[in-house]
Length: 89
Image 1: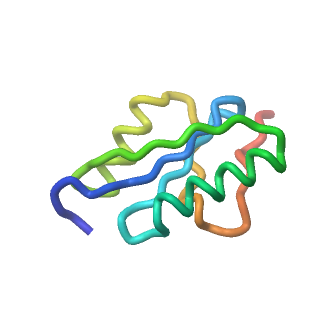
Image 2: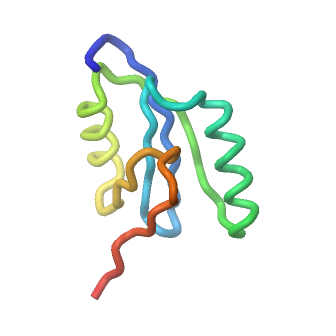
Image 3: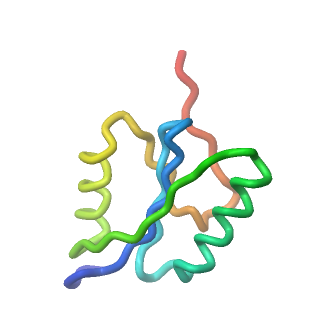
């Protein structure tokens, strides 16, 4: 999907150096925020979320990867089950 100013919801876990991103065709941002808060409480974590705008999913991902170097992209938050980041050897 390409357009102008598409909205993406981003969830960042700075402790594990991961981030997830759901696009305009994904779930509602309010639902994502509430789900993130629930999971963070269950796991005793602090997560950060925000909305960003970009012309396409590819450009949004590129921007996030440049702003969070060394972070692992987990895919959409709404994907089940929640994936774990790759383990370092």
